[in-house]
Image (cartoon, rainbow, N blue to C red):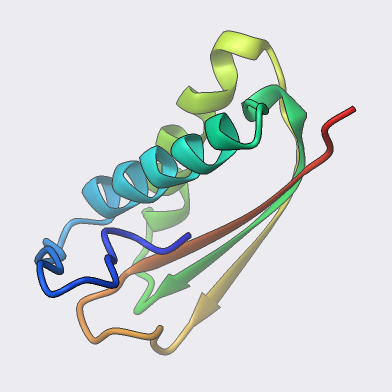
Length: 102
């Protein structure tokens, strides 16, 4: 899942706001988990790729991400990586999650 990317002609503009892009990515992941009959409690690991990182970014992104796991009292393992750029010039974050559903 990437922040606010759609494959149709109505691709939304990515605001230059890490927290907003993180929330949009997490909302998209929630939709994917829901469609698979899963939830954030089923996530076993996630990767966060942050483009053009600044001091404090990891805390901002983590606070948003953790808010989606908090209702389940769940903290999966994670990997945070800072990169020069992602797939779109405006993109500040990409999140990949792995979930196990019984």
